[in-house]
Length: 434
Ligand code: NDP
Image 1 (cartoon, rainbow, N blue to C red):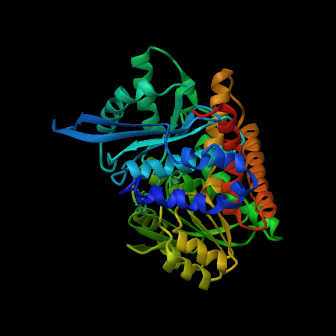
Image 2 (image 1 turned 180 degrees about the horizontal axis):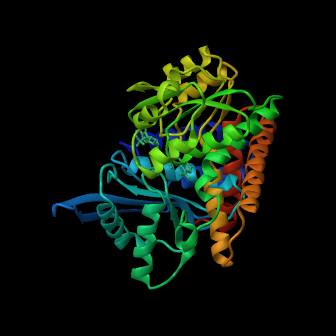
Image 3 (image 1 turned 90 degrees about the horizontal axis):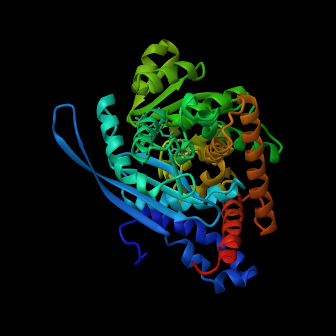
């Protein structure tokens, strides 16, 4: 902690992983000898840069850009870009650190990294977004590439932003290097199912978790936090698997929909019109009610999927969920549950799917996008979704089996941390002290 002051989210993410690695180091003294734990906590490279841009009124703004290239033992750095006012080095480092283990768990050849800016895309015109993205890429381009570092989207960065970023990358480098960014649109190098992948993957992971415990999603009452990319497609797939999603949220509050969330209307309001959840409630009429400023966790449910942001589900939320009879919580977002909340859930016997496993479908499908770019191919929706489903099944199995092997059956967090770590650790050992 003295090494990384003022980076609370990063410290939290590191502690969560290190807490689980004691028994691994006991079994593998060679990891300790090579100081792998110390090495894995230190990013290979951190880049911080100025992002100047001019708004529609002609005023000059200065934002800060980040890219943390954390670990490339398994492959090129891979991880999203986040545009949100809360972004700082500590947030980017926590996300990059998580990404190492998540990417390892997918079994695919990708290292871990993350980036972003404290730029707030809310309320900005398309032109302002474009000029910001162009300025951001004017520095970032020299650090990324198919074989070095492959960014993608995250909070505040969707297909529109990836388009502007890719356009500027192509213009500066004079290369149509599709594999340099993922999350691209279908007609310019994107892959089918990438948009849906994180949310679909989270739903598949919950289904696997419930099935491993003799149960299923069919007929279950489900709540989801957030209403962005991950949330929308988690809702869609949960519904397809028979769950009843009755509430979701955004940064303004939540909506309770007695008839079940109308996912197409939600998509129209949030993705197309870029409006708030209140607009959804208004259009739905009598079946829906909007609770401004309230957390979604107060809605009774059997399954809860936090899909918005870090530390959004705290102890009071966990207590409410336990009282209402929740049986499973899976993290669609990165580290949305505080460590104390996770402890409460686990002590109450609630199944808990950590983000690095439950939301790994997004980055896995990004790696599939890289494969398609490398072979100049484009797979069908059905084949891509089948690959995603198999990957999520394998990730679940790997967490489940590892937890059992280390004497903590059902502890998916331990399973994910240990299984994710061991693959990276073996690669780091083989590559020498670098
Ligand atoms: P989006 O920007 O599409 O959506 C984010 C959603 O969360 C919005 O509904 C937003 O509300 C809400 N939100 C964001 N910040 C806050 C906050 N501080 N308080 C309350 N609500 C908030 O992002 P994504 O769906 O892409 O990402 C969501 C989470 O999933 C993040 O943790 C991300 O790191 C993680 N993730 C995303 C992946 C992906 O493929 N997209 C892959 C793996 C993980 P509003 O609409 O009001 O802004």
